[in-house]
Length: 295
Image (cartoon, rainbow, N blue to C red; front, side, top):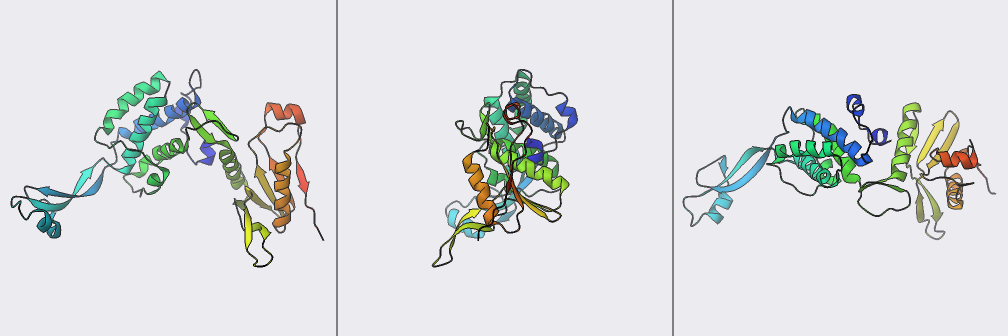
């Protein structure tokens, strides 16, 4: 599901060498990440030019005259210069180092820890700082850096993990949590997208309430998936939970809201993951809610 939902291509030759064994799931993902990183490092880190402004004893690049006058009125032997410097200390390498540092703390696999120790010195000249998803989204990929795109996709996946307490709809993965509700709904959407042309994800143009006096709308409705098949138009809402005997009332109320708010919807489907437990309770059952029209 992680592979499909996040568009990360997993190399089969790596997958074949990775097994759960005594490792946690986070170490399985770390192993894939580290092997891919090791492969790319053999061709070198991604370097880039950064602009530098500095007071120097000799002229380098060009003189920044406005700052030179401000700073060097007394210091006659200094020149305030602007120049470009080729460096490995860029957002791509900073993100990788931050991710390596994260695995250094949480990995329980001796193989992974050994490989981290081998790779970490390559980033000695790179600043270690906290990286956010917004930082990764600012990266402009070019022909030189694009080979690290898969590596950064993994980094983004790990940074999205949250080190917080267990809560409904989330599954703990060692020290890392994935929002399984979001992961499951995106996985189902991507799978439907492979089969059908007209599939919408979290399309929210309808509202549940309208204020009579002003016409102002409230409570935007966002079903997970709207699927158009021939003349049929379906709403599919995914739920990452186990079903015991029957669906939760709150889920049924939610489907009823969708059916009565979206035009030309023929059916709404609650879609749960198939597990041993829900098969045991319910057998092979499809839950279909017929649309009710009110005069």
